[in-house]
Image (cartoon, rainbow, N blue to C red; front, side, top):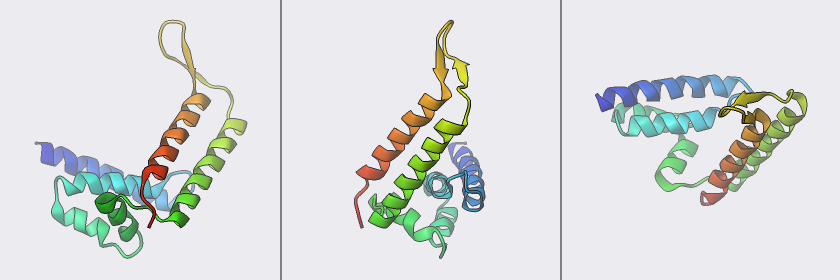
Length: 128
């Protein structure tokens, strides 16, 4: 049962990754990394299919197997992530969501927190 759930989740993230490579608002590589993780634990054939792809396979394999991101990729990832975060902060209205009874979370703050988490993940990876 666990294997089937992992294949289903891997397929979902793989689809999101493919869409992300064509849409500028959705990051493709991170979804491919998540898909590869699920396939690595459920289907060796699907995992090999992702990491052997000539277009996006090598960076995914390097990150999963050796926890390596090239310096050029780090600069590209961090700059695009923070540019998108800053643009989002300035163009979106201050939406709030109910958190507990009378406490509200600002969605802009959640976006900033997620960007900081992404920055930590990228910076912790070794350079190639």
